Image (cartoon, rainbow, N blue to C red; front, side, top):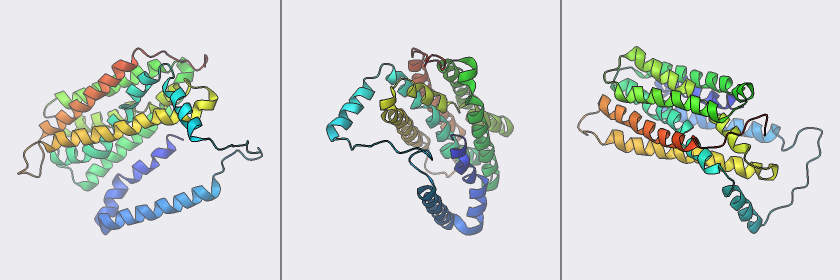
Length: 274
């Protein structure tokens, strides 16, 4: 499910560049909005709340007091803060590069045109999808969630640091690092599984939602922060210097490292113990 949800990222790479070149970005977004509406219609028509052949359980509406008490119970869950700390910056680190800075970086630093940039972004999206499928079964194979996240996080941190500290990286090594970043940073689903294991069944919905809120907050924070950093340079030129992008990559690496260090002390909830 996580891998299939990334199909839209493929459409936002080379296909988006080709469509923009053919019909302009405005009509490309109009067509994207129409496709989204069609998919939403099919979702409403085909997706059921309960499995087929099973009677839906009684669902009594909750009062505001019950909702707030449930949220308080979620936030009091031991170990939740450490999971939130790392989850805030995993997907955010990857998507800030893939969705925001990889294209401008490849244009300003390496001079790639829109189609060539789209091809690199396509490879990055493919690496992410493959990474998701590879990370999926690892917690059951190795019977750990925490150490899969730490191992993957070490790869994320190393890749970001290389992009940040190495000046004048040639095109091929730069592309390899960008693709590698998306491949190794595909373990968000393992953190979600770790977070879900902290909650009893009656708090599962609220608990997983709370875990995912951290991802959303981080995915808003890092693009805004790095936008200020990259935009702080000289304004008399359209092309941004490589140093601005390196500083942005370094900033992402710093906040990711903070979250990963906080997670180091989390208790591992193993699949065959939960």
